[in-house]
Image (cartoon, rainbow, N blue to C red; front, side):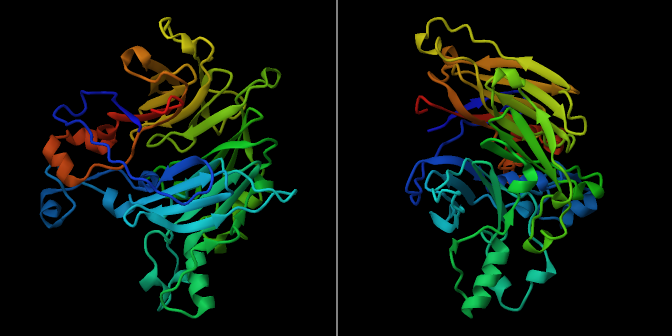
Length: 415
């Protein structure tokens, strides 16, 4: 069970304690190493837009705050993506409680089964006339209408599930049959990333919506064990885009998070939403959190040295250095949470090109008794009914601040 905490209670005052519902999904044959939820695609959705009174009357998505809720139209919150040591990535439909697709990862040079260390949904929804035909669209659900990326060792692969479903139906000459097994990837970006060590995390950027050109500046980063972050631009979304993609014609941008002499790894790197598509944060086993502008990759704009917490009563943490295992931005892009090896969670606020520490959640506050493996701000989106019930301020809805109040953490202590 995950631990849920309130970060800023002043955002929503009349809220109730969230209820956690347990659901077990069985399919992988070995340990599950990574997860991604389809609500991450909400980040591609423009912020709630102000509407006038006349449009408000005719809009079913408008709340009493005067803002349109775009969450339901821009993402499907019922999809879960998982990666495992068994060499597969699986796409789950939470409504059906079963795997809709199983993506097979190519074997390594020695014929071994590689571990899937990170998975990610491509933020763009697939829309293309080349897939529109008389038959397939009628049977394609939301689980097929997405592109996913996975990494294993030093390799990055992409799977266009809409193309797979279309090709599967055509080849089998059937109206409703779609092969749930995807035997080979549609994209192989391994040679373009040029990673020299095992990749730990993939992260997509969040394009700005005040610029039409920003939709073509989607970045994908790969943080690896060499202490570097490799970044590609214009990552393909559709199978037909691979040949003309700019990522195949340019060198990756490289951020050097750790000094070579430190032999530290970059365990995580995540792009900042709702701010600028080129801002990201990285963390690693050098106990550092760094803020970057990837247009200026030579040095970070700001660095934070994480020191061990003052939890002398917990002797189990004395041997655990404050390595940074996980980073997560809040939906508004204001807050950054870090999962630390000493069992604490650090919450920082982004102020321009700086990071300011707001507080530290340790075992004395009911936190974890061992290293924090993952932190996450759930970006499920606030529906119209929730906004009305909780009396969320209009400004908070517009800026995404209403979703900043909940943070989920998971630790090696089993909590």
